[in-house]
Length: 272
Image 1 (tube, rainbow, N blue to C red):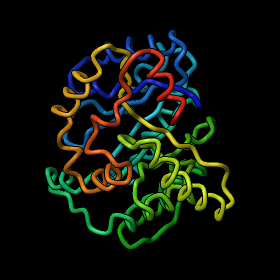
Image 2 (tube, one colour):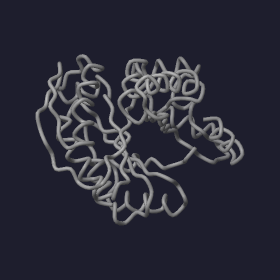
Image 3 (cartoon, rainbow, N blue to C red):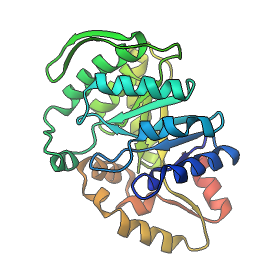
Image 4 (cartoon, one colour):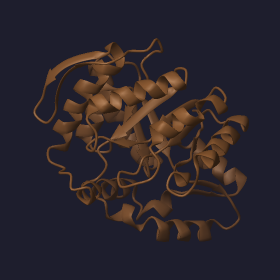
């Protein structure tokens, strides 16, 4: 297991300099990766920020967790990801995801056939990242194009996936999945089996599982969980997350926070 830092909390309320300082501190403190999400309705562009801070942060993996797919054509995302990969000298992991219907509605974007959309998106994105060209006609997306392909290896790609269909797509087409607010019971009993079976059938290597959870060493775990519960109420209302909370046997994000003494935090991390 490798441990990284997710700096998404800075994306909508800080400067690029603050994010750069946060990522640099993570690297100097020995963390193995640094991640930024991109909120579909505003905030910094995650890939642009990672490229901007690349030269100032030492040699750790940097990634997006996640960039929403519906607002962008995969060719546009491929060009941007390849640019960031060059700036990062091959250290990028591109995390993408469908986001949620309620968030796309804020942009006036439909959410029809999400799994078909994801398959079509990857059918265009992956060849462009790996080979620099694609010829594909899909049900929801099509592309006939060639892009500049730099010398760096293709960035890793992971897909935010919770349901069985999305997990099968992630396991069979990409390097794995990136998760948020998913507990150890659900990861072990649902995420890993679905993902691994799909990867095996597609003759792909053992998939990555990237899990994002808040971690706090504190003597006030109850107060921390109460704050999380108030701040992240919306996650309990999103259908995909509600299904994961039910699987885990918890009521919401606060129950999944890793908070407590140093020993308690270490035990919880080792259980993931």
